[in-house]
Image (cartoon, rainbow, N blue to C red):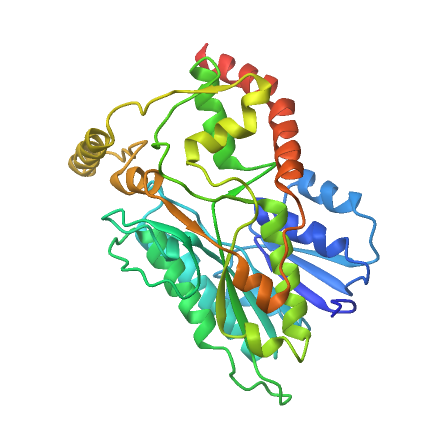
Length: 377
């Protein structure tokens, strides 16, 4: 099923995942009529990336806040597909709980309401593996799927907000629209996303440069996870959008969530960074910086210090208990259900994903070294 002729709104279009989705939509054989790009800011660099993709599709830039109802009323009318990637990602507590909730939950609700008012038929929500866990006991999952039961026990604001937003999206599936159709929704739970342009990967790279090109080990080797390449999670959005338009497939995907991974190696977060950079001369510490139990209580100590300092100034620890658990819990999932229900197959092999990411790291490393040297002086 083709997306040709559709009008699509992509929120978070200037972000790491959003820009990749837009590039893939532009590269579709059958051109879309229009792609509307909604984000608070969209850089000239991102727009240049879009221009490099030769396409007849009209691009419309809409800059503003997802919580602005008037803005949404200019962005949504005439659209038939919304891909909602915009959110605040925060695992360290850099953003206050209310702002996180307002953007990630209330912003999603306002967008859903605008879609229903304007007869938008298809809505895809970019969810997160953290909707599932890991929980605060660090209970592992090996090769889980959409039917895997898991007791979620931590109250990290980011995870709570993503879980509530996903619930709002999926509960509205099937609502009648004015023209007689019904609202079709779906959520894709992504693993940790890597690839060219990843700010998380950039942060780890900076740490390693400051450590003589050796990655700090914060995760034990046994804490197996399965990251996903940005080009593959973007491709999953394109594939499920096509399934939504297919009368024989839509009943399989509507109102459901899917775990999206690929064939990247199952390894710990620390070892995965090494896999991407070892051919560039980077290393990884053989052991965690301290025993994991001690690291957990060290993180707790930092959280207490942060709480005591709160009346005076904001101190955000570089590590917290949730991150210690996240980095040290085996937590991997299969993409087989997505493969069965909407023919998702990774667009990029592990070898190609690694080559693309490693080349990006090689290109930016001299710039990062120079930047860090300037900061030090």
